[in-house]
Length: 294
Image (cartoon, rainbow, N blue to C red; front, side, top):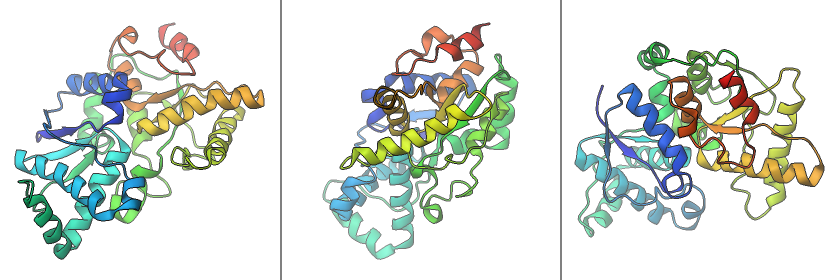
């Protein structure tokens, strides 16, 4: 397998280091060949800065891509927001050579150059490939066959589909495939592809309504859901914190824990539960831990 440049982004290493550790544990067990990226900046964030100044957004993203290009490596991201930014910038500059020339003139002023050789991958893209699924199955020491999990894909991973080209935009399955390879059962539900609402900062009630609708549906399903699995730190944060807040406001008993995909992968691959900081969230996965330890 090719070596990949690891792009961590801002949110996970600065605010959620336990998620970074879970990913690194998984990568180590699977022997993923990664090289640290030195000198990178924020991706930058795919919503607000792009809206304020597209040239600044693209230039900062291109600078990160240029660092990987200088390393001679493609990029692996562990955050869906970073994935959307870097993938969008790479596609935009690949399709518009005049714009690439403009951005490259700006980069030249700070001694960087980007020619468009760097590809961007999300870790789900990697682990959902057939050879990695087989490796996951062979290295699983704690099958998740007693767990029923709900999957949240989020917006940045699959939209806009023509640019991201990640999975089927209406019926994505790559996260489900990974979880099934570990023995877990995943369920279908009506709000599966709804946004988490994290970016609705100017109208918090919109984000809260999106969280309430999804978590209420999951709690009302006939089959008990052990956890909601997400692959973006913003989505993990939004569902975990807002679920607790909504429970207090509405007196609904919303208590489904939210886990980052590498956390549940690490469990299946034999990482000690005590090393994963599973209690480091608003909705603590007590029932999930009980199932995993009995």
